[in-house]
Image (cartoon, rainbow, N blue to C red; front, side, top):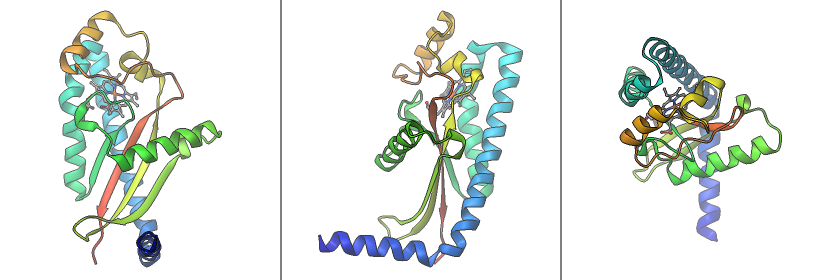
Length: 189
Ligand code: HEC
């Protein structure tokens, strides 16, 4: 109990300590997410139009990770995507991310618009390094249903199964939370 109180106090203190910076980090996170989201959508739309969904799946397989890594590296931050039901096992949520995603589902049920569902905090990792972390819900739009909906074209389904035998990212409907972007920024101390 004592340790728990101490932890909570420490947590509150770190958040206070960085109160000024937090706003700036939140802005930086939102900008990085916007850049990533725009880039992903643009390349997805282009390849869907040019080559159709089956080719697009193969393209996503490489490009999504590529685009994500490039934006992470160029900004010196960590940015990624995850979900409660992932297609790519490489995007599996950590226990903290799962917890936040479950809270996002509750907030949505209580009527909050997905567009405004996000979460931020300062935390200290196992090596005593402080980080800012931010998560933002990703809504399911119409274009997403081709590959994440409940009626997926059989050829496309075959291709997805080939690339992702453990795929769980289907049966989504418009307006569902598809997942979340996560940004982590190391804090200088
Ligand atoms: C052409 C098929 C296709 C379309 C359309 C598509 N996706 Fe995906 N999506 C994929 C594939 C393939 C992956 C796995 C590759 C990756 O990103 O790691 C994926 C992965 C994801 C992930 C990462 C978590 C996971 O499941 O691995 C999120 C989040 C996601 N998609 C959201 C969306 C959203 C939101 C839309 C609509 C704007 C969308 N997708 C449209 C094929 C598609």
